[in-house]
Length: 452
Image (cartoon, rainbow, N blue to C red; front, side, top):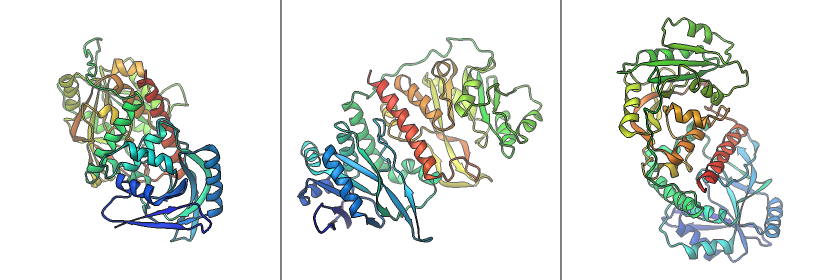
């Protein structure tokens, strides 16, 4: 049994609890029931589990604002309650953009809906969405008016999911959520089609012999102060067994620890130790240095400075995929491990949700495309990386997927190490918001380009 709490504007200012048998709170059936139970012009709905304490004064101010502005779909900031410490933390929610189509957008726990608009949506749709009903309504409403952020804390909420940000970010590739993800992908694709941003095959093949290169492949490692891990990363590259020539371009972003010294200790002519002139580069800027280096090969392959290739066959598998599929980019699969290489949940991240037909559309719904990433150098030089340290690879992947085929390797070829020094292991709400807002901006720009 599912319990849905709604608040109908009335003098008694109380929540009405609706008990629903055998239905997910985000299903279309739930939304239909809400339209039947709600006589007022607006209602607030709590769709997330966890205890919520409404601030009725703030909610009425929010409601009055929504009525004046004829808001269809609204959300607010809130206070997060920490029962263990008896404290509360202000949680700001971010502004909604055209590109905010990911299904995990944080609206908080309480949402304001204009009842007549929901009824219109119900009358126009007869789908059997078990999980994506609410998501479909939100996207439908956004085509008329973007969801409106009310920048005040209107309630207190005890969040039951207290996992770190580094753990939550992989929920969308958990096989246990596959049925839900399929529904979400279908709804997102329909939305992109409705706004004229859906792309369809056939995608363009690339001529992999259009330019001459002295080296077939280059592994590129941007690094800043990774004295604990850089030697392991270098070793995993140098032990690669291939039928072609390759080198390793390490873009040392002015490390102040022993990173540079450790790199220089390797006596291997395949290593290019490059220190940029600029001191204001993010990871994306370092990638631009690497792909435009005169010794960069025909293909540029990613390795983070604290990660490893799974075995000595990784590079060969990646380059073979380029030629077999005639694609512009190849993305592999990886295994999550700790610093000692013991497997961590969720284990293998293979992005099997990607399909050749619809992967480029679904890429706008999800938060990442996988790793390791490899690029056809002439093309990625033309596109370039944004000079940031988060989302730079996602931006390039979206741009490539708009027109070109992306090849996939669904078996793990990479070890992603999670440890205390990972930059995304446990982020503050401010940094999570900055990251999400930036990726939403990337999606907004990409949608605009796909519409023309």
